[in-house]
Length: 268
DNA sequence: ACCATTTGACCTGT
DNA sequence: ACAGGTCAAATGGT
Image (cartoon, rainbow, N blue to C red; front, side, top):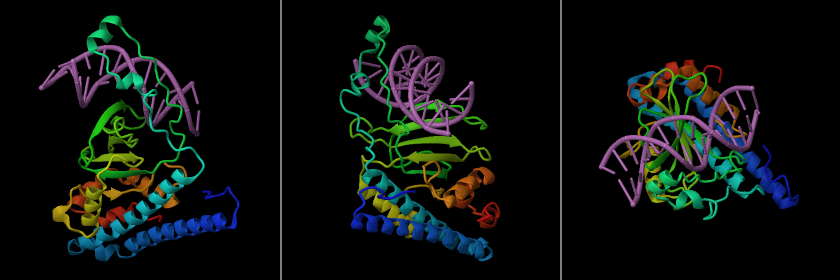
């Protein structure tokens, strides 16, 4: 991964190396927290220590999110163009809703608008496992695909505020192979349509372990899975999904078997 | 009439 | 060439 590798001034070089060092430290912290989980697995596997196990997994999640934020900042501040907010002309055809009757009778064919920027930029991307697909946002489904080697189709959603507020975040949802009551939900990008105060409240409640006010189902954050430059640890955690199947999130919500989870990640 | 979902076509990256 | 992501016409519900 390259940071501020253009420009060449001393200050930008120093800034770049600071960022690199920060990322290195965060990645190390994440890895060490994971190792601590392994070392304490016997202790944390007992039911009375479940909250400690949850806390430690959350620590790993905090490191993951911090790395995500830095990656997002890098994507926004490098000289790569940011993803364009759809302008009126670009989206004119779909925004101007023609009447169904007119469209059907005259067979009006709306010329296809090609988004050539697709997949062109690195996005923050993370996957969670959850028994429910609802979250704090409203999503509009825009596609569904059969995915090779999986038995369940993948559904694609975009934020309902894509057009009115230019919110570009998308997610895809797929039932996991091992447990089809669990969904693997991958978020691509960050909401720009928010309501940050509410999100912060949720995060705050989550980190303080206040389960009574937790708005979201408990989830295990698997880190960035598909972004360019995702850490090796993220890959390992991502790999744990395929190896462990989808039962992780569900078991953590009720009866989390840390030993099983660590056994499936013993190569850490 | 409006809105959300479905689904086949089309696009890009590998 | 293929897989996966997105678009937009078609469709169905209210």
